[in-house]
Length: 380
Ligand SMILES: [Mg+2]
Image (cartoon, rainbow, N blue to C red; front, top):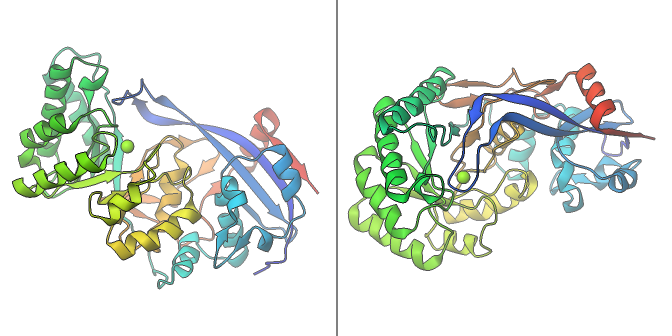
Protein backbone atom coordinates (compact mmCIF):
# COMPACT_ATOMS: atom_id res chain seq x y z
CA UNK A 1 0.00 0.00 0.00
CA UNK A 2 1.26 3.38 -0.91
CA UNK A 3 -1.02 5.35 1.37
CA UNK A 4 1.22 8.38 1.30
CA UNK A 5 1.17 8.52 -2.49
CA UNK A 6 -0.15 11.77 -3.90
CA UNK A 7 -2.71 12.40 -6.61
CA UNK A 8 -0.94 14.10 -9.51
CA UNK A 9 -3.44 13.73 -12.35
CA UNK A 10 -7.21 14.25 -12.53
CA UNK A 11 -8.96 13.75 -15.85
CA UNK A 12 -12.66 13.67 -16.58
CA UNK A 13 -14.69 12.96 -19.69
CA UNK A 14 -18.04 11.59 -20.79
CA UNK A 15 -18.07 8.29 -22.68
CA UNK A 16 -21.13 7.21 -24.61
CA UNK A 17 -22.72 3.86 -25.26
CA UNK A 18 -25.81 2.06 -26.45
CA UNK A 19 -28.36 -0.28 -24.99
CA UNK A 20 -29.20 -3.32 -27.15
CA UNK A 21 -32.64 -1.75 -27.74
CA UNK A 22 -34.31 1.51 -26.87
CA UNK A 23 -35.94 1.67 -23.42
CA UNK A 24 -39.48 3.00 -23.33
CA UNK A 25 -41.41 5.00 -20.74
CA UNK A 26 -42.19 4.13 -17.14
CA UNK A 27 -45.18 5.20 -15.05
CA UNK A 28 -43.70 8.70 -14.54
CA UNK A 29 -41.35 9.45 -17.40
CA UNK A 30 -41.21 9.37 -21.18
CA UNK A 31 -38.94 7.13 -23.25
CA UNK A 32 -35.45 6.50 -21.89
CA UNK A 33 -33.93 5.71 -25.28
CA UNK A 34 -30.89 3.72 -26.21
CA UNK A 35 -28.01 6.16 -25.64
CA UNK A 36 -26.10 6.15 -22.37
CA UNK A 37 -23.74 8.89 -21.22
CA UNK A 38 -21.17 7.75 -18.70
CA UNK A 39 -19.16 10.45 -16.90
CA UNK A 40 -15.74 9.11 -15.91
CA UNK A 41 -13.06 10.53 -13.59
CA UNK A 42 -9.56 9.08 -13.86
CA UNK A 43 -6.97 9.62 -11.13
CA UNK A 44 -3.21 9.11 -11.39
CA UNK A 45 -0.99 8.89 -8.30
CA UNK A 46 2.72 9.68 -8.12
CA UNK A 47 3.56 5.97 -7.83
CA UNK A 48 2.31 5.59 -11.39
CA UNK A 49 -0.98 3.88 -10.48
CA UNK A 50 -4.22 4.81 -12.26
CA UNK A 51 -7.80 4.37 -11.04
CA UNK A 52 -11.06 5.42 -12.62
CA UNK A 53 -14.79 5.26 -12.12
CA UNK A 54 -18.12 6.94 -12.72
CA UNK A 55 -17.81 10.41 -11.25
CA UNK A 56 -18.06 14.17 -11.52
CA UNK A 57 -15.56 16.76 -10.39
CA UNK A 58 -15.66 20.56 -10.66
CA UNK A 59 -12.48 22.43 -11.53
CA UNK A 60 -12.15 24.03 -8.07
CA UNK A 61 -12.55 20.59 -6.46
CA UNK A 62 -9.91 19.14 -8.77
CA UNK A 63 -7.54 21.97 -7.89
CA UNK A 64 -8.10 21.25 -4.22
CA UNK A 65 -7.53 17.51 -4.67
CA UNK A 66 -4.42 17.77 -6.81
CA UNK A 67 -1.31 17.02 -4.73
CA UNK A 68 -3.35 15.53 -1.84
CA UNK A 69 -2.32 12.18 -0.44
CA UNK A 70 -4.61 9.26 -1.14
CA UNK A 71 -4.88 8.61 2.61
CA UNK A 72 -6.28 12.10 3.17
CA UNK A 73 -9.36 11.23 1.08
CA UNK A 74 -9.62 7.47 1.56
CA UNK A 75 -8.95 5.35 4.64
CA UNK A 76 -9.46 1.61 4.76
CA UNK A 77 -11.67 1.65 7.87
CA UNK A 78 -13.74 4.60 6.71
CA UNK A 79 -13.84 4.43 2.92
CA UNK A 80 -14.04 7.64 0.94
CA UNK A 81 -14.28 10.90 2.89
CA UNK A 82 -17.80 12.39 2.42
CA UNK A 83 -16.35 15.45 0.66
CA UNK A 84 -15.26 13.21 -2.22
CA UNK A 85 -18.37 11.07 -2.73
CA UNK A 86 -18.75 12.35 -6.29
CA UNK A 87 -15.50 10.61 -7.28
CA UNK A 88 -15.59 7.73 -4.83
CA UNK A 89 -15.59 4.98 -7.46
CA UNK A 90 -12.33 6.31 -8.89
CA UNK A 91 -10.84 6.38 -5.38
CA UNK A 92 -11.95 2.82 -4.51
CA UNK A 93 -10.53 1.71 -7.87
CA UNK A 94 -7.26 3.59 -7.34
CA UNK A 95 -6.68 2.04 -3.91
CA UNK A 96 -7.64 -1.36 -5.28
CA UNK A 97 -5.07 -0.93 -8.04
CA UNK A 98 -2.43 0.21 -5.55
CA UNK A 99 -3.05 -2.74 -3.21
CA UNK A 100 -3.82 -5.20 -6.03
CA UNK A 101 -7.17 -6.17 -4.50
CA UNK A 102 -10.67 -6.23 -5.96
CA UNK A 103 -12.95 -3.60 -4.46
CA UNK A 104 -15.21 -6.39 -3.18
CA UNK A 105 -12.33 -7.69 -1.02
CA UNK A 106 -11.72 -4.20 0.41
CA UNK A 107 -15.46 -3.77 1.02
CA UNK A 108 -15.74 -7.14 2.79
CA UNK A 109 -12.80 -6.25 5.04
CA UNK A 110 -14.37 -2.86 5.73
CA UNK A 111 -17.53 -4.61 6.93
CA UNK A 112 -15.65 -7.21 8.96
CA UNK A 113 -16.67 -10.10 6.69
CA UNK A 114 -14.48 -12.86 5.29
CA UNK A 115 -13.32 -12.03 1.76
CA UNK A 116 -15.21 -14.30 -0.62
CA UNK A 117 -12.97 -16.54 -2.75
CA UNK A 118 -15.32 -15.97 -5.68
CA UNK A 119 -18.13 -13.47 -6.01
CA UNK A 120 -21.32 -14.43 -7.90
CA UNK A 121 -24.15 -12.13 -6.81
CA UNK A 122 -27.62 -12.71 -8.26
CA UNK A 123 -28.80 -10.12 -10.77
CA UNK A 124 -31.98 -9.23 -12.61
CA UNK A 125 -32.74 -7.83 -16.04
CA UNK A 126 -34.17 -4.33 -15.48
CA UNK A 127 -34.68 -3.46 -19.15
CA UNK A 128 -38.43 -4.20 -19.48
CA UNK A 129 -40.01 -0.76 -19.85
CA UNK A 130 -43.29 0.33 -21.50
CA UNK A 131 -41.99 -0.66 -24.92
CA UNK A 132 -45.50 -1.40 -26.15
CA UNK A 133 -47.29 1.96 -26.03
CA UNK A 134 -47.47 2.15 -29.82
CA UNK A 135 -49.46 -1.10 -29.92
CA UNK A 136 -53.25 -1.11 -29.83
CA UNK A 137 -53.73 -4.71 -28.83
CA UNK A 138 -52.74 -6.25 -25.52
CA UNK A 139 -51.88 -9.47 -27.36
CA UNK A 140 -49.27 -7.68 -29.45
CA UNK A 141 -47.95 -5.86 -26.35
CA UNK A 142 -47.59 -9.12 -24.48
CA UNK A 143 -45.76 -10.70 -27.43
CA UNK A 144 -43.30 -7.83 -27.58
CA UNK A 145 -42.51 -7.90 -23.88
CA UNK A 146 -42.18 -11.69 -23.85
CA UNK A 147 -39.78 -11.35 -26.80
CA UNK A 148 -37.70 -8.93 -24.73
CA UNK A 149 -37.68 -11.39 -21.85
CA UNK A 150 -36.37 -14.06 -24.26
CA UNK A 151 -33.54 -11.67 -25.19
CA UNK A 152 -32.72 -11.40 -21.48
CA UNK A 153 -32.77 -15.18 -21.06
CA UNK A 154 -30.29 -15.42 -23.93
CA UNK A 155 -28.01 -12.95 -22.15
CA UNK A 156 -27.93 -15.25 -19.11
CA UNK A 157 -30.64 -13.68 -16.97
CA UNK A 158 -33.14 -15.74 -15.04
CA UNK A 159 -34.74 -12.95 -12.94
CA UNK A 160 -36.69 -10.02 -14.39
CA UNK A 161 -38.32 -6.79 -13.31
CA UNK A 162 -41.29 -5.37 -15.20
CA UNK A 163 -42.28 -1.73 -15.23
CA UNK A 164 -45.98 -1.38 -14.44
CA UNK A 165 -48.36 1.53 -13.98
CA UNK A 166 -49.25 2.04 -17.64
CA UNK A 167 -52.55 3.54 -16.52
CA UNK A 168 -50.90 6.21 -14.37
CA UNK A 169 -50.05 8.52 -17.25
CA UNK A 170 -49.47 6.91 -20.62
CA UNK A 171 -52.67 4.86 -21.04
CA UNK A 172 -56.24 5.17 -19.73
CA UNK A 173 -56.36 3.76 -16.20
CA UNK A 174 -58.41 0.61 -16.79
CA UNK A 175 -56.75 -0.29 -20.09
CA UNK A 176 -53.24 0.34 -18.75
CA UNK A 177 -53.87 -1.72 -15.62
CA UNK A 178 -55.33 -4.59 -17.65
CA UNK A 179 -52.24 -4.55 -19.87
CA UNK A 180 -49.93 -4.57 -16.83
CA UNK A 181 -51.73 -7.69 -15.58
CA UNK A 182 -51.65 -9.44 -18.97
CA UNK A 183 -47.90 -8.81 -19.30
CA UNK A 184 -47.10 -10.02 -15.77
CA UNK A 185 -49.02 -13.26 -16.39
CA UNK A 186 -47.39 -13.86 -19.77
CA UNK A 187 -43.88 -13.17 -18.54
CA UNK A 188 -44.35 -15.50 -15.59
CA UNK A 189 -45.41 -18.21 -18.03
CA UNK A 190 -42.34 -17.56 -20.20
CA UNK A 191 -39.72 -17.94 -17.45
CA UNK A 192 -38.92 -20.61 -14.92
CA UNK A 193 -41.72 -20.96 -12.32
CA UNK A 194 -39.21 -20.39 -9.52
CA UNK A 195 -37.35 -17.48 -11.11
CA UNK A 196 -37.73 -14.15 -9.30
CA UNK A 197 -40.14 -11.79 -11.07
CA UNK A 198 -40.51 -8.25 -9.74
CA UNK A 199 -42.77 -5.33 -10.64
CA UNK A 200 -41.99 -1.62 -10.32
CA UNK A 201 -44.79 0.98 -10.53
CA UNK A 202 -42.58 4.07 -10.09
CA UNK A 203 -45.24 5.34 -7.65
CA UNK A 204 -47.92 5.06 -10.35
CA UNK A 205 -50.37 2.91 -8.38
CA UNK A 206 -52.40 3.69 -5.30
CA UNK A 207 -53.21 1.25 -2.52
CA UNK A 208 -56.43 -0.15 -4.02
CA UNK A 209 -54.92 -0.45 -7.49
CA UNK A 210 -51.96 -2.27 -5.96
CA UNK A 211 -54.23 -4.78 -4.25
CA UNK A 212 -56.20 -5.27 -7.46
CA UNK A 213 -53.06 -6.02 -9.51
CA UNK A 214 -51.60 -8.34 -6.85
CA UNK A 215 -54.87 -10.22 -6.57
CA UNK A 216 -55.14 -10.63 -10.35
CA UNK A 217 -51.55 -11.92 -10.51
CA UNK A 218 -51.65 -13.99 -7.31
CA UNK A 219 -50.65 -17.15 -9.18
CA UNK A 220 -47.53 -15.40 -10.57
CA UNK A 221 -45.67 -15.47 -7.21
CA UNK A 222 -44.16 -12.02 -7.56
CA UNK A 223 -40.93 -11.62 -5.64
CA UNK A 224 -41.11 -7.92 -4.85
CA UNK A 225 -43.33 -4.92 -5.46
CA UNK A 226 -41.26 -1.77 -5.98
CA UNK A 227 -42.50 1.80 -5.47
CA UNK A 228 -46.19 0.98 -5.72
CA UNK A 229 -46.97 4.51 -4.47
CA UNK A 230 -44.93 7.06 -2.60
CA UNK A 231 -43.90 5.43 0.65
CA UNK A 232 -46.25 6.13 3.51
CA UNK A 233 -46.49 4.48 6.93
CA UNK A 234 -50.29 4.24 6.94
CA UNK A 235 -50.56 2.82 3.44
CA UNK A 236 -47.68 0.37 3.84
CA UNK A 237 -49.13 -0.82 7.17
CA UNK A 238 -52.44 -1.51 5.42
CA UNK A 239 -50.73 -3.24 2.49
CA UNK A 240 -48.56 -5.41 4.74
CA UNK A 241 -51.62 -6.52 6.74
CA UNK A 242 -53.49 -7.29 3.53
CA UNK A 243 -50.55 -9.30 2.11
CA UNK A 244 -50.31 -11.31 5.34
CA UNK A 245 -54.07 -11.89 5.47
CA UNK A 246 -54.03 -13.21 1.90
CA UNK A 247 -50.86 -15.25 2.36
CA UNK A 248 -48.96 -13.40 -0.39
CA UNK A 249 -45.21 -13.60 0.33
CA UNK A 250 -44.40 -10.49 -1.75
CA UNK A 251 -41.62 -8.22 -0.52
CA UNK A 252 -41.97 -4.43 -0.43
CA UNK A 253 -39.06 -2.61 -2.08
CA UNK A 254 -38.48 1.14 -2.00
CA UNK A 255 -35.92 3.90 -1.61
CA UNK A 256 -34.61 5.02 -5.00
CA UNK A 257 -34.98 8.67 -5.92
CA UNK A 258 -36.36 11.08 -3.35
CA UNK A 259 -36.95 8.62 -0.57
CA UNK A 260 -38.75 9.59 2.61
CA UNK A 261 -36.45 10.49 5.50
CA UNK A 262 -38.52 7.95 7.51
CA UNK A 263 -37.83 5.07 5.14
CA UNK A 264 -35.21 3.37 7.31
CA UNK A 265 -37.48 3.62 10.37
CA UNK A 266 -40.22 1.90 8.40
CA UNK A 267 -37.75 -0.77 7.24
CA UNK A 268 -36.67 -1.34 10.84
CA UNK A 269 -40.34 -1.68 11.78
CA UNK A 270 -40.94 -4.31 9.11
CA UNK A 271 -42.99 -2.21 6.66
CA UNK A 272 -40.32 -2.17 3.93
CA UNK A 273 -38.33 -5.32 3.17
CA UNK A 274 -35.83 -4.18 0.54
CA UNK A 275 -33.96 -0.85 0.54
CA UNK A 276 -32.97 0.48 -2.88
CA UNK A 277 -30.96 3.65 -2.40
CA UNK A 278 -29.06 4.51 -5.56
CA UNK A 279 -25.55 3.10 -5.85
CA UNK A 280 -24.20 6.55 -6.81
CA UNK A 281 -26.72 9.12 -5.57
CA UNK A 282 -26.50 7.57 -2.12
CA UNK A 283 -23.01 6.24 -2.70
CA UNK A 284 -20.88 3.13 -2.37
CA UNK A 285 -19.27 4.09 0.95
CA UNK A 286 -22.56 5.20 2.50
CA UNK A 287 -24.16 1.96 1.35
CA UNK A 288 -21.52 0.03 3.30
CA UNK A 289 -22.26 2.09 6.40
CA UNK A 290 -26.07 1.82 6.14
CA UNK A 291 -26.02 -1.89 5.30
CA UNK A 292 -24.61 -2.66 8.75
CA UNK A 293 -27.89 -1.38 10.20
CA UNK A 294 -30.01 -3.07 7.54
CA UNK A 295 -28.24 -6.40 8.12
CA UNK A 296 -28.80 -6.09 11.88
CA UNK A 297 -32.54 -5.53 11.25
CA UNK A 298 -32.80 -8.36 8.70
CA UNK A 299 -33.68 -5.86 5.94
CA UNK A 300 -32.54 -6.60 2.40
CA UNK A 301 -30.25 -4.43 0.26
CA UNK A 302 -30.68 -4.05 -3.51
CA UNK A 303 -29.08 -0.80 -4.71
CA UNK A 304 -30.89 1.06 -7.47
CA UNK A 305 -28.75 1.35 -10.59
CA UNK A 306 -30.06 2.51 -13.94
CA UNK A 307 -28.99 4.61 -16.86
CA UNK A 308 -25.21 4.60 -16.71
CA UNK A 309 -24.22 0.94 -17.09
CA UNK A 310 -21.31 1.41 -14.64
CA UNK A 311 -23.64 0.60 -11.73
CA UNK A 312 -24.02 -2.93 -13.13
CA UNK A 313 -20.41 -3.54 -12.13
CA UNK A 314 -19.99 -1.30 -9.08
CA UNK A 315 -23.02 -2.71 -7.24
CA UNK A 316 -21.57 -6.24 -7.46
CA UNK A 317 -18.74 -5.21 -5.16
CA UNK A 318 -21.12 -4.60 -2.26
CA UNK A 319 -22.30 -8.20 -2.38
CA UNK A 320 -19.50 -9.67 -0.26
CA UNK A 321 -19.92 -6.98 2.39
CA UNK A 322 -23.70 -7.08 2.92
CA UNK A 323 -25.26 -10.27 4.27
CA UNK A 324 -28.74 -9.46 2.98
CA UNK A 325 -27.56 -8.28 -0.45
CA UNK A 326 -30.37 -9.43 -2.73
CA UNK A 327 -29.82 -8.39 -6.35
CA UNK A 328 -27.66 -6.42 -8.76
CA UNK A 329 -29.94 -4.37 -11.04
CA UNK A 330 -28.60 -4.92 -14.57
CA UNK A 331 -29.17 -2.31 -17.32
CA UNK A 332 -27.37 -3.89 -20.28
CA UNK A 333 -25.32 -1.55 -22.47
CA UNK A 334 -21.96 -1.35 -24.21
CA UNK A 335 -19.89 1.79 -23.64
CA UNK A 336 -17.29 2.69 -26.27
CA UNK A 337 -13.93 2.77 -24.48
CA UNK A 338 -15.00 0.76 -21.42
CA UNK A 339 -13.96 -2.89 -21.44
CA UNK A 340 -16.18 -4.81 -19.03
CA UNK A 341 -15.61 -8.19 -20.65
CA UNK A 342 -14.25 -9.66 -17.41
CA UNK A 343 -17.82 -9.57 -16.06
CA UNK A 344 -20.14 -12.32 -17.25
CA UNK A 345 -23.76 -13.15 -16.54
CA UNK A 346 -24.49 -16.85 -16.23
CA UNK A 347 -27.67 -18.46 -14.93
CA UNK A 348 -28.84 -15.28 -13.26
CA UNK A 349 -25.58 -14.50 -11.48
CA UNK A 350 -22.80 -12.04 -12.25
CA UNK A 351 -19.36 -13.59 -12.36
CA UNK A 352 -17.29 -10.78 -10.86
CA UNK A 353 -13.63 -10.74 -11.89
CA UNK A 354 -10.97 -11.32 -9.26
CA UNK A 355 -8.99 -8.35 -10.57
CA UNK A 356 -7.68 -5.22 -8.84
CA UNK A 357 -10.14 -2.37 -8.29
CA UNK A 358 -13.42 -2.74 -10.15
CA UNK A 359 -11.80 -4.99 -12.77
CA UNK A 360 -12.70 -2.66 -15.67
CA UNK A 361 -10.39 -1.24 -18.35
CA UNK A 362 -10.43 2.09 -20.14
CA UNK A 363 -9.30 2.33 -23.74
CA UNK A 364 -6.50 4.91 -23.52
CA UNK A 365 -7.08 6.40 -26.96
CA UNK A 366 -10.85 6.68 -26.68
CA UNK A 367 -10.61 8.21 -23.21
CA UNK A 368 -7.93 10.67 -24.33
CA UNK A 369 -10.12 11.65 -27.28
CA UNK A 370 -13.10 12.20 -24.98
CA UNK A 371 -11.03 14.30 -22.56
CA UNK A 372 -10.02 16.43 -25.52
CA UNK A 373 -13.54 16.69 -26.88
CA UNK A 374 -15.77 17.11 -23.81
CA UNK A 375 -13.66 16.80 -20.66
CA UNK A 376 -10.83 18.32 -18.68
CA UNK A 377 -7.41 17.37 -17.34
CA UNK A 378 -5.36 18.78 -14.52
CA UNK A 379 -1.81 17.66 -13.79
CA UNK A 380 0.67 18.58 -11.07
MG1 LIG B 1 -37.42 1.57 -9.66
